[in-house]
Image (cartoon, rainbow, N blue to C red):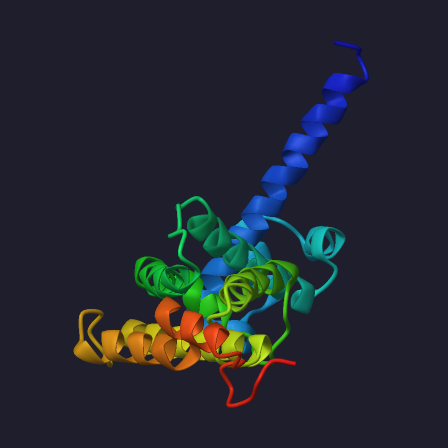
Length: 214
């Protein structure tokens, strides 16, 4: 190995370790005191670094918080993408609701951090996770089984899953409560039609919204 390469790699490893220490400390504090209570001084104390080190790696407090939140969304997305979802697009929506709730139950701290910032600030991983849901809804539309606009249906699915998950995490609902299944199935039923109904609509030239195909 060239003489200059070893020190470079050592610095890269050290830099990565420093970033992990800072993010770990910030994540712990965010879970404990929230964004408003987070102080750079306390992050430095826990991570064993100085303020300039944090500013060098992340810029400022807001950017640090956004990075922690983005990491949580990335972990959430990885947890879903490594699972095999149903081939049927409507069942895939039902499956994603269940997996969303499952992740929130298993990782309540991460889940709270994903939605805890004092103001909504979408991060790249958060937008990617939402876009994955949008693609599932788009697949339902492509199969001719969606009864609402794609963006409206996507937002509705997210509202239902997020609301239930937040209530379960907070202890207001049991995960096996009938209300959880009823809401999931009612949402899916409202937004989709079964294959037989779609075939019937195509047979008579209807577009499924009270009109006719041109």
